[in-house]
Image (cartoon, one colour):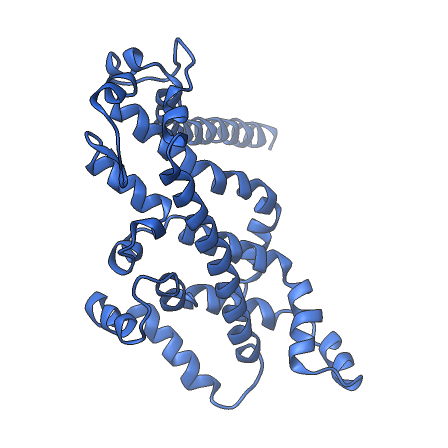
Length: 295
């Protein structure tokens, strides 16, 4: 018996060590591109041009950041992205919660509505019909074109419905006996009890809006309204000619190479959403698990 336990403990220890080494290797492979981009954005022009893969800059330099912030294009794009993210996330969570709450209760017509929601997980209208719908509603070149077509994610909606089902109904019954309306119960009881799920899906929606790219290219024609991801695309395309709608001279290109500019913009575009994640991390696992225990 002791020999068997010893073998089990040894094999378990070997498995744990192998598992940790594998996960550490995967984490390293994932982090290396980000480290390379961050290091390149802080390196000097000569070091970036003379190195194929940079992990630690020998000379710390802020010339790329001084250059990209010297023009109003990047700050304007960051402001537009922040507005798209904040307003879009509020719209997403409001509409998702307003639809999930009644569907988590026994209402008439619940089955066909749920069938339609599941149908949208498998099929969609496609890009061209969606464009004509947005155009017909007069939403082209407005941020509403980035908000309304993706106002409710059906997968998140289903998980939130399951989450609401698991909440105790005693509080609702007490509130109804005291004359509380359904909007009051949702706002004062359901939402406070659902903070893990609400925080989790707010993070998902916010990341999607912050990284919005394809819809912005299709629906937004005004360069002053471009989000940061579209501006980054323009930098990649016009790296030899300018940032967005702002050109820079040959001398500026020599001082700040296009590679460094692209790396600096990637860091600026990625850092804000990474900074938000630690504040919502404690809700992340709890929100996902509680919402997926039963269907």
